[in-house]
Amino acid sequence: MTIITVLGTRPEIIKMSPLLPRFDGLGRHIVVHSGQHYSAEMDAIFFRELELRAPDHFLRVGSVDPARQVGLIAAGVEKIILESPPDWVVVHGDTNTTLGGALAAAKHRRSGVRLAHVEAGARSFDDLQAEELNRVLVDRMADLLFAPTEGDAANLAAEGIRPERVIVTGNTVVESCRRMATLVDGELPAGLTAYGYAVATFHRQESVDIPAVLSDIWAAISEIAKRLRVVIPLHPRTRKMIKLAGLDPSPPGMDVREPVGYREMTALLKHARFCLTDSGGLQEEAAILGVPALILRDRTEHRRYVESGLHRLAGIGRQAIVDEAKLLLVDAEWQSRRAIPQRLDHGVADRIIDAIGA
Figure 1 (cartoon, rainbow, N blue to C red):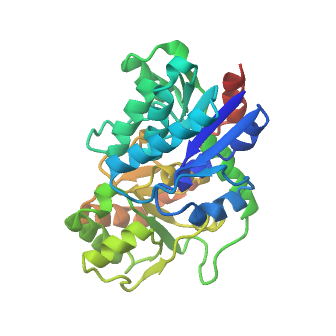
Figure 2 (cartoon, one colour):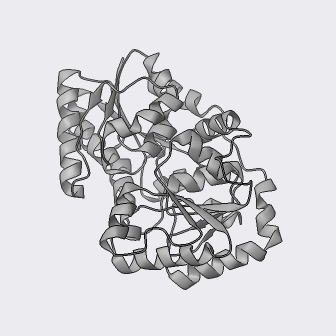
């Protein structure tokens, strides 16, 4: 059996980490890194920390415009498919890498290439989100859809996806996050005290590419930082847009840092009082660790965490974000949510491996 796994962002590396070594054991396994964001070399720390072997191919597409990026990824993956015809192409989530890899695989279905989508069925129901479009398109093309929850499977059923194509597996991020949380137990970056700070990350197109929105989010975090230290491992995209918008790059109380690896990010998150984020992956990791989150978006594909009361949708307006943070800081019940046990997924990798290897 030959498997091609296509990934290109750090969340994909994290979430696929329980599967990559297992795919190696099924036969020939080719790992393709698209280099979607900046350079594959920047992701090397994630491969090291997660004890993963290096990818076999680096496409180095870079941070170009979305349509060109998808096209370059599809063309690069297709070349590898032609050189080493696979039984399966496996993609994850909702990125441009996911869509590019899926398109390349789908074009070769007549040649026996099958497409598997890990983390299928997630929906924010916001058609303006580029990731939502990617999710829907990839799910339509996939031969096998691994849905993390029954709710995700229900989304697919509502869209007419045949049930025999869908397998509810649980979420791969649980295994990787809990493993790393155990490794960093007791670790805390110098100068920080447990629960004496918040963590903020945001980098999505709708958050940072519109100056007025970026200005509101930055001003809101600056206001929150007057009450509680806010640690911000700043994404290169966000740093660039802050500079272009002429915003103060480091207001008082905001601890702005360079991007960190998975180990340090897990330690930061594990001991934070709460986090502010537009990242779907960080929403999941915060929930697994029992850390409350203010979601810097109007909608989320991870609605179950909001419905459970652990996370809150704060939106992207300055005052709404500040008001939600103020409520959080005085709401003892919400602060204690970290003590609520979250649903844990066991045997996720086994279920996916069994289906691929069948």
